Amino acid sequence: MITPIFLLCILTRQALCQTKDISPAKIFAPLKTISEGSSLYITCSTFGSKKQSTVYVYLCKDGVGIDTAMQKKEQNDAHFAIRQVSRHDSGHYSCIYSRTKYKPSALNDTGSSRIQIQVIPSFLPADISVAGPSTVSEGNHVELRCTLSKTVQTLGECQLVQSYLTRNDTVVQVQRFNITQMEATFIIEGAVVKDSGSYSCIVLPLKCFEMNKGALYGNNSILVEVKASLVGQVMFYSGIISLMLSLGFCLWMIRHRCGSSKGK
Ligand SMILES: *[C@@H]1O[C@H](CO)[C@@H](O)[C@H](O)[C@H]1NC(C)=O
Ligand SMILES: *[C@@H]1O[C@H](CO)[C@@H](O)[C@H](O)[C@H]1NC(C)=O
Ligand SMILES: *[C@@H]1O[C@H](CO)[C@@H](O)[C@H](O)[C@H]1NC(C)=O
Ligand SMILES: *[C@@H]1O[C@H](CO)[C@@H](O)[C@H](O)[C@H]1NC(C)=O
Image 1 (cartoon, rainbow, N blue to C red):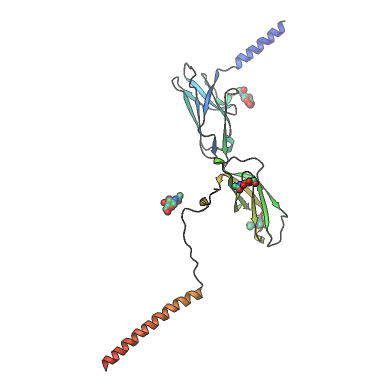
Image 2: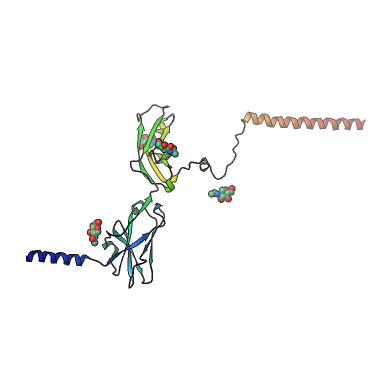
């Protein structure tokens, strides 16, 4: 009889000691899908809770506290910003608050509602494969296929993003990467010896390949004229020169004749 009571006592004591005065707070984020390098803004709100004093608001990522802000009794919102986000900042975020000040990392939030934040990476290393043999004779074409095994999130539901083909770490081709198909195809037409090298592929989920052709044009345009060959130019200029010479000669003849007739 004593043993169960004793056990219960221990469990209760443990439970009491572990209990921290933590309450859930509401969480708001203006943007849930953001690009790598931008800033993540999150607001934790204690609106509606009857707090009697100053509290500490904690921002949690995947259930563990990462930041804290002090909030006065009359305040409702605590603002958090994570600058220059990386892909590792993707996750489930939530807010909690407490009258006690804790080290954020010592807090585990298992209860309150969470929002999912997705950081779109600026580049993704993709898989490359060659359709056909990887050793070809000069003049043949080589088809390289670039694929991703995990689905890609893009900005504004962009369907075609850019992908780069690199040879010995230098970009050699840009191609459309289809988000539905999860692949891009690069073709090297009429391969030459200098096409040999180590190829790889990178997908840029933030760089949307616009569907309307307008986006493929630059801001302005210039007219480039290819001049005729040198022979043509010489003929053109010599034509002008001979025309001028004949005109000059003609004028000289007229004058000369007039002069000679006057002289007579
Ligand atoms: C919080 O959870 C993590 C894993 O989810 C665990 O390693 C850590 O010990 C927990 N911390 C506390 C204070 O409970
Ligand atoms: C992407 O691939 C899918 C499946 O093959 C195709 O239906 C779709 O038209 C392609 N999208 C573009 C923009 O080419
Ligand atoms: C790329 O590197 C390989 C060796 O790693 C070399 O054989 C090849 O010539 C290089 N290609 C170019 C275009 O530099
Ligand atoms: C496009 O060109 C106009 C002038 O032709 C210039 O004022 C404008 O800044 C340019 N826009 C960009 C994005 O370069």
